[in-house]
Length: 108
Image (cartoon, rainbow, N blue to C red; front, side):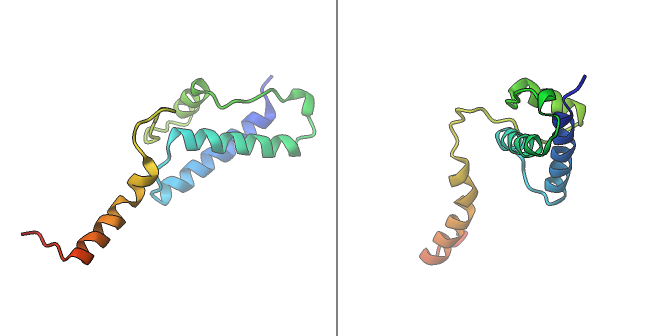
């Protein structure tokens, strides 16, 4: 017997992933796992079959199986202790462009 809330959440999550892919938005595994937890909790609140729901943690094993079931190849897997500052990396190009314009740097 499958957890109906889990099945519903995975279908919704797959639709969300497809939407992000259409928008060319990169999806990191940590973000996907957080989205899965959020959706699961939302669907669990709506469920009338509370006794059938099991605790869901969006583990790395679940993540790997979800990717395989839905043939997701482009999800970037990043570790919890990744050394790169993703937030700073996202703003780097804008800051570099601003610096180049302000200081008058040229390709020479």
